[in-house]
Length: 216
Image 1 (spheres, rainbow, N blue to C red):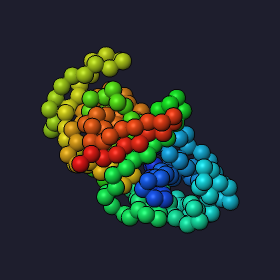
Image 2: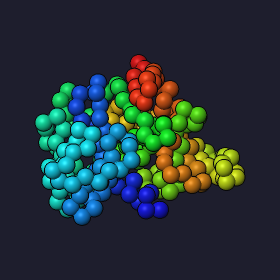
Image 3: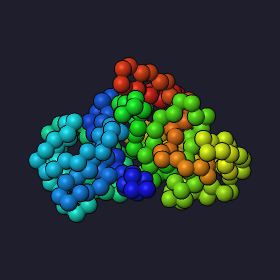
Image 4: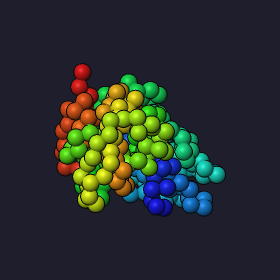
């Protein structure tokens, strides 16, 4: 429960050129230290003056942290929607390339947006559709019960579910609009980034890196 509450506060920024996108999330503050997530990896507590994976914490105050990446400073705030900053990338959803790095267990986690609100996702090529729990749908303000009802099998048995259409799903500065999704009454620690999103991309993988190139 504590982990889910923490993930709900995540914020992502795409830092650097689109071709070398790096995701940095400010998921919380622990005293004077910033709790950051870099490229979907396990959250790391970093004190002012220290660096982690190329991200240096300059200062912290309240729910904000000033960070430095590649010589440029950016202000991150807990709870803000993801933003695209840095050289070669502008604010918006005009990008066409997503670069993800495998986390623990070889899974590809990322911080993104559904209908403009932040969520923690994991790439799941075995999922037919983008899938999320009732709890996440309620937090995101999705009227899931107006969708098409169905039943789905889970590890804990058969549960109720609803087929809906999301206005947008965004990772970094890349958005896909009108994405079919399934809201399940079962427990889910993350949103599954399934094939109704992934089929819009050409996927390549090398070692611990996955690259998604948008199809046109």
